[in-house]
Image (cartoon, rainbow, N blue to C red; front, side, top):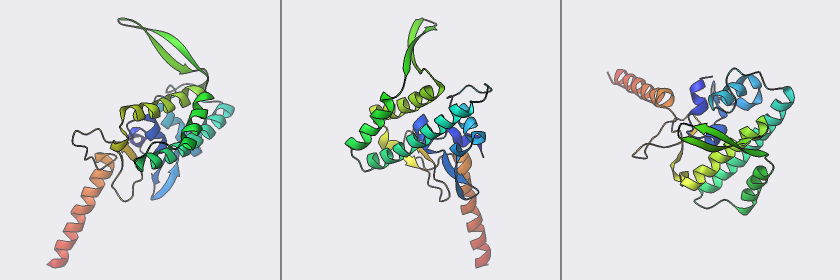
Length: 196
């Protein structure tokens, strides 16, 4: 699995949606096993790289919560894609998830003084808080109309289009854009040989 896909979404909640991706032309769930989920968590800055592995109990709780949250975000993306606000039912479901979190405020030192930071009291709360925060930040900033699905026919990844023109087509030029261009090149070459 190419680690670059872990962060192509441009924000944590889209990266969570992208934990279902194509691998060998079949959908693969990165959250189904710690061996693929932990690198995803590390790449997204949700757990420190190289830390002690999560306990079995923490992993079980976290994976269940992440899959559940991913399902809610799938619904949310569908509803928002219909150019409407979230339904009351879905909004309430997400609100219940945030209400269940245990978050604390932490004072941190900065170059110019101090700042307040928010973090979950447990690993699970911290991961979920940060992902939910990225979702609400996207809603507040009105970036919903910039969420795209990769145009490569074998890709299901999504991303926030931050290009100036708003016409980005690929989750990654290096992955899908180049594959598409190479396929076009070989198709043209094959056609030109057939015409001769």
